[in-house]
Length: 261
Length: 352
Image 1 (cartoon, each protein chain N blue to C red):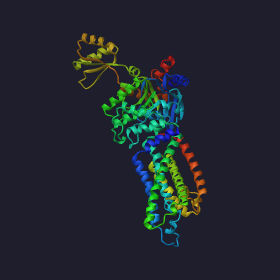
Image 2: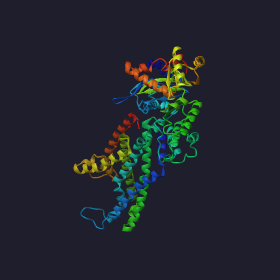
Image 3: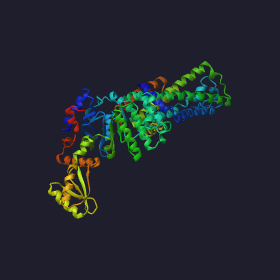
């Protein structure tokens, strides 16, 4: 049953414009942050501890640029997922889907899996392009890339790719929940991005320790492999608890709500 | 009365009777303080084309959504294709529906839109091409939905409803916004579905269309059932009239007196100098009338029977229903007047 919903959703997601838009946006974000990070690296360390060319020559250097893309990647993932779910209400297509699949939780699970696989593909593809861009930038800035391709470097890259994927999926799940609860892609994207980006940033700056509790901050920490405010394991556990609770609420509402759209 | 009489139908269907495709008892939906559907007792005979008629906001779409499991009833029960109303997953694979106009993904082609639904419903993808051909979109199936005309969109909506080879086809306003040619196409399509043995439940504002294609009729107003039964029964319940035109106004005046002496009522109608009369009598009295008029020296230039249209019958029963509701404060009484619901009689006699 979930497979049918998954396959059905993929018929929609195969359309070219969605691929160009989504993969383009995600690749653009990841490549841009990689280029900016390497281009902005200093020749000598400064008092603020900004990234230097010497640091980029380490095994973890390849990951440095990608690490910075967590929040933007999350914002794009959130928007894509919110659009896919909220759009069903806005277009009025949900009623057609529910006549063919009345098990609403199954429909939601299938759609969710399809969106997540789409995003995982996008993150992997974007990372590949960003790696190419990083090598080009390294060449331009005279950074040695020998350590990047070492076993340690590859392991570091693999870990980062996993972290970015988890983070992007977390943002996407929040987007789906927003789409279901707000029943509109436009409202879900606008309200969601407003809360996840500026509101959370302001709260984090204003209240010490808030970074450990706010979902976007936690997902950003996960993308970076953990931060001083939110270590990776703690961030993953907290976000998982949030998402399980939020998904349970969204499923409950979705299953019980009258479909009048 | 309608509620009491419909109960055996629902119970028979719950026991597996196939006489009715849909039967509901006291189906009610309340949105906050607003009562959208009020104790609806529906009986849709299997294999019929049933029209679902009512003014805007009468509760037609809400009723259809309840039948399709999209809206949870506030009260009442019922069965669809022999399964409980609350168990939509049991009957929806055998139901096709077009609800409140065709809504599809604009960027996808007609074929892709149907593929989305076919994959979701576990329907063979070969069926998509069959359905596209059936609704006349075979040549345009690969074009984006956003480029479709309104008529093509409606046909794609009907195609989506046909995907599961349904036993029950529920169409909500399938002719909305169509030109006369498009309406005729949809009408022919609905007839062909019924010929294939489907039960077709179609809501429409176009009473003339309903009269042409439906043999069974459900009329609701402000969420309440005010008539269900055969279209012919509804029309027959309204007395036919003879329409007579005389050669002169004086003849018409004399004819009114003559008809009145015979115990019939007559009234002048039309704007042709008072020469046209409507006489409360059916065509069996036309010969007598003609002879009487001749004997009295009255020349008739036109004599014909006029049967009432569904539109006239609809306005009459909705008006009468309103008066009765105001009069006794019980809408169900209006719904349950003898002759207003033929389903109970059929249920009692066991006829399908």
